[in-house]
Length: 303
Image (tube, rainbow, N blue to C red; front, side):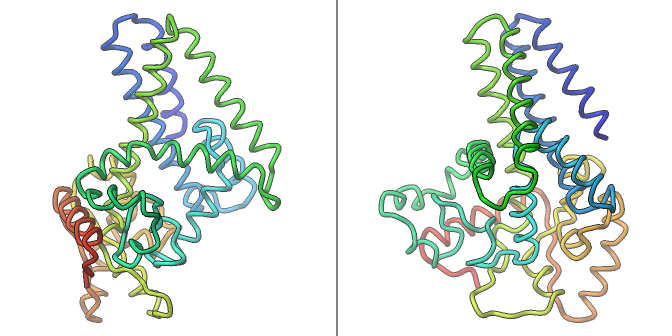
């Protein structure tokens, strides 16, 4: 998969350089952003030790996929993601439930600055637009991570990120001019963010939030806060297996191609114990997300 991603990215770069047509430039930029996200999904698999079990190959593959190919800090993302898995949808401890300009639950609204309130009031309607700027958060957090005192492999990470942006710079220099370079850079990063957001938003947004002091067993913590998205082989590829979010949270080291096999077993297990197992369509997942965002902006509890 990593080889395929690398070859696909190389082909997209060649296409962008080869053709001066604006439509081809935009198309290649969109495809470039798409493959960046697919590379991120593979990095996600590596981080969960689905590909390698031992630490050294995991660290090397993570560096190649995260720092070199994506230009992000792999250690920053891994640390953040591990906290999320331990505290899914926790109002205080889950970093994925805290967006500075959004209120993901009613209590969060009171914690926001006044200038953010007009944005929160319409967050359900502009959420797709805001998601398009995920790349700014990821890039800035990755750079900031390099200056934290306890970062592992600081120099190696900095070198990987520097090489990534050097290669991007060399690519942009081949596109004919600064206008073409800006178009490619902007479109590719926006496409990356939109695709990344479309994959991760259905996983937990609009599902049960865990309050401070609330304690549930492992099964209920992971199942009640997650949502599965029905689909087929294309959905499995598009979501990188994360459409089986419940199974992934219960068995994070299980390779993505086996999650579908685990689904009926997990669903039956939950039914026998009276644990709500939620699955919906792609459209249904976004409907639930937007309804949740509207309730949160109005200060209404979802439960």
